[in-house]
Image (cartoon, rainbow, N blue to C red):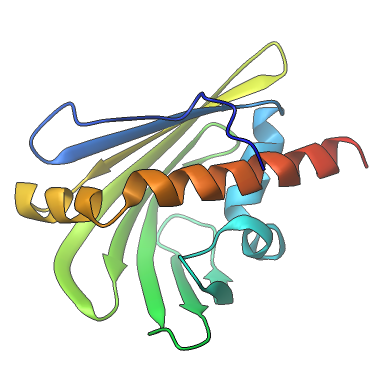
Amino acid sequence: MKNSGTLRITTPTEREVVVTRVFDAPRSLVFDAWTRPELLKRWLEAPGRSMAICEIDLKVGGAYRFLWKGPNKKDVGMYGVYREIVRPERIVRTESWEDWDAGESLVTVVLEERGGKTTFTETVLFPSREVRDSVLESGLQQAAAVNFDRLAAHLATIRNA
């Protein structure tokens, strides 16, 4: 899968990371790919692991939990609560990691559609600069590039179905 070159990762403040990527799909499809477990499991992976658990209660106050497993790898889990949902344009949720006491982050996803293409913008507000820097050093850019390329390929199969 080829990276379209539209992935950008910036650090506008000491505690934030902003990830943007343009997808060749309407935002309703991108929104569904992020919020429907059967779709999310098809493309969102952790390095060397696939998603084994994908629980989503998509409502304000509803919880989610993801767990990735892989051969000879430690399980990786993430969970949080939805704070705001405006279909198909905005999702605000908390994010915490199992087995890593990094505190709770606030994640805001905005989807803007122009001419059938959707700009995905995710702003993550970390509890500290140290946590943000740790995430950046852990390979965020490479993992995001791989997953977003997988998402782009998935969206293409949906659009062409």
